[in-house]
Picture 1 (tube, one colour):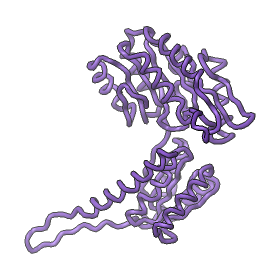
Picture 2: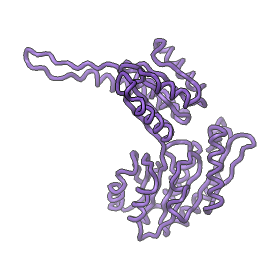
Picture 3: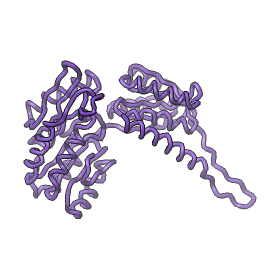
Picture 4: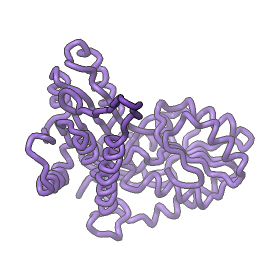
Length: 349
């Protein structure tokens, strides 16, 4: 959360900077003619829906449209209310007038239906699950005739983020990417590494490294900075991830982890499991927890694996390639251009 505070400051400063640039841009006028552009807020309110796992973006989503003059109805995740309260106090201390940003805590579907039902809905600014975003988009479409204007919809959703290692990759670097990309923040980020494709020539070395390092990971109270991992956000998430652990233990080879501990909190062991089927559910579905699935391929089938990555999951948020061959990196980057909005080369997603 220290990083989140810094990132939040960046959001606020950058948004003001770019708003200033936008408002300053004016068309060229010929002699005797005065052309001008006027930027006006949307006619109605913007519905900002923010997630539990990213407090920096939680304030960015309502403040970005507010900076440009819009009224915002802010529906934060119920598990972030203390942080949201503190951020709202900061805005009030800075002089934000009442009624510009309006927090409406409560049940997500109930609040969403109320927003969709208003003829004054002018926009949606969203970060969260793909299922929820689709429901909001569908709701706008079903009610399009009732709105005073066409609602603008901006959203960022989930991911089934991949790491693909070429036979030329550094196995230590790949293992580090799996550990950090998959287990930081308990895997509770939409950019978390969740599926890995390893060449047969490197699979054993990478797996051994992941297993040995995972054994050293401390899990506990996040106020103790010697702990690398804490609990997942709530019981609902705990039960969902536990279900995937059951799936891994019954249908895959679990090399490390595979257990959940709910005695003193919602703790999930960092889990690394290997599957034989590249279309396995662990390779397709977003888990949002510290569970990483791997598939081992024959070294000569690298191009086929790139096709698998492209076709296995509907998500395309982040991905990474590891290789020490520059030609392979160029080829992979081009081949997977539509598979990841954020693409990393020899670095964790």
